Image (cartoon, rainbow, N blue to C red; front, side, top):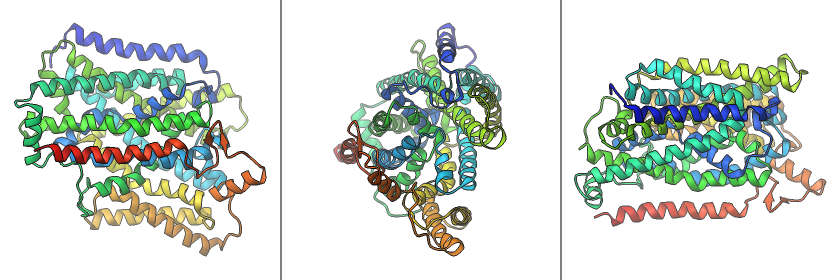
Amino acid sequence: MDKLGGLNWSIIIIYLLANLLLGFVLLKKVTSANDFYIGQKTTPWWAIGISVLATYVSAMTFLGAPAWSYKSGLSVIAIHLNYPLVIIIVMSLFVPFFMQTGVVSIYEYQEKRFGNASRVVISVIFMLTQLLSSAAVLYGGALVIGYITGIDVIVSIIIVSIVTLIYTSLGGITAVIWTDVLQSGIFLAGGIIVLVILINQLPESLIDTLSILKEKGKVNPINLSTDPTVDTTIWAGIIAMTVYHVTIYGANQMMMQRTLGAKNIGDAKKSLALMGFGAFFIYFLFIFIGVLFYQYYQGRVFDNDNTIMLEFAEKQGFPGFIGIIAAAVLSATMSSLSSALNSFSTISTNGFYEKYYRPNETPQHYLKVARISTVFWAIIIIIPAIAFSSTTGSILELLTKIGSYFVGAKLSMYVLGFYSKQTTEKGLLVGVGVGFIVLLFVQQFTDIAWTWYAVIGALVNVFVSIIASIIIDGKQKEWSLYSIPGQRAQAKLENKPAKENGWYVIPGKLDKVSYYLLGFFVFTIAFLLLMENLIN
């Protein structure tokens, strides 16, 4: 596209300036490193919830979800059915631990439970996996700029990085959250506009289109196959991907850092519940768009599946439409990237610099280091993002595959911390190492779908860690204070109330909203089954 026109350029430029302005406005609220990491605990829960939702629903969704469902059909939605179950687990297990201990990095828990080495290991695993996934997100946004303007993708990567870096380094987590709120509105509006225009552009009516797609095997949301080599079955979605996403939301600094900045534990849980109820609709919207694209383009093969959405937008005559799409994808990209940069800065400054190098400096000194660290990570992310520029398949599928190799290690380190009496640090690290080796073997010598890697890795890690701990350190006589039984015993000993303002503060208890989430999970499956059966 050689010429965007004044209207489209105006939409893109105004959007970018609005993000920068917000960063400058919030600069005055950041006076210490803690303000940079988790804010001043004044952000409303709904803003935190939207931010959590916006961070994971990134450009990978806007571009990658339609690309994936274009190829695989509506069965892709199975991967995203599990969010209500995931949020129930995270709210009842992870949030109480992290909120009660007052940490700014969730990996501090690993040090309290096991020791310094385990904290370092899980921090490094997070930074490595998040670096790769953030680079994929950055590439997705740069792809949009390159496609629309003709600017080289590498130059586009640098431009997106610089804009995101500025407002993130100025306003910290508070800027991340409020720009996420702005960005999510643009993102959602862009998707709805695409759907409406696409339905009007279909050669047949929507009902007839769905009937044709059903005959082609594209409208099959519930795949009951038990074949472990198929990656989008209902079993992979409910079992395997629940394990995957529990790690994404519970054992992930980028996600939990927002909830740590909530006013209280009730607000933290409400913000996550918003994600549990909202994610299905967002993913269904973009996956459904991809299925309709299959009929619109008559199954045409694209050189790069991620450009399907952009090509559609380019061909429409709607004034400013391509500018809206560009702003929507950029908003999704910058939301995820800013979250990653803030988390990287928190872990490297609080978890390494402050702990091992300069432990007794002022809050203002650590704030300065955190901002410098943000710049450092923005530069580092550019390197793998450039490498991803040669990718032609769905970037959402690619991103999820990358994360699946490491999920088992991260999840098992928390599961064992919560529920294992016998696990010690040495045994835990042995389990993590063996888990990686087993997954490499599975990937090289079996056809098992990547969706099951999280389950396999977690089971191997848990089993080996417990056995290795007993062999190396012998049996433990008492529960750790930082296990769930230990927390409950301590609360009973100190006569602490089980609830705070109606919300459980003791790990392992289900709040009322958890039952609503469970009901919503059943509703989504019933909705998909009904939809498939009603299509003739």
